[in-house]
Image (cartoon, rainbow, N blue to C red; front, side, top):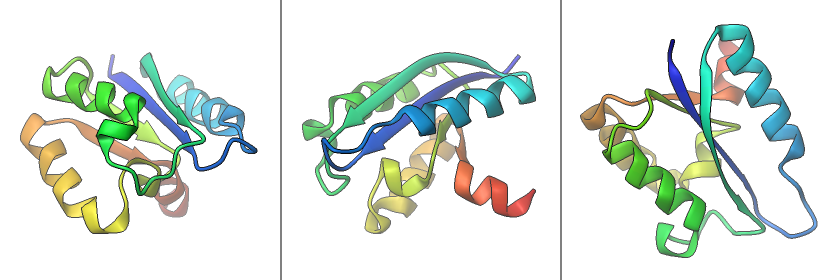
Length: 109
C-alpha cells in the first residue's frame, strides 16, 4: 500500500483547509493509499520560505527521510511558488517521492 503525506495550505486566516483535506483524503481512500500524515500551513503565504512554514519544513524533512512514498496537495503552487517548481521536482525525483497535484490529476482523469 502506498504511503501518502497530505500537504494543506491557505494564504489567509480567513480561509480554511477543510475542503482540501476532505478531497485529498477521499482520493487517497479511493486509490487504496494510506494517508500517514497531514501537514498544514494555514494563513501563511506560499511566498514565504520553508523556515516560515513549519508544516512544509516538517514535510520536507520527512521526504528526505523517506517516511512516505507520495506527497498529495491541492496544487504544486500550494507547496512551492512557481519559480521553485523545478527544484521541488528534482528533490522529489532524488528521494523517489511521487507528487500528486490534485488540480492536474483531475485535468488528466
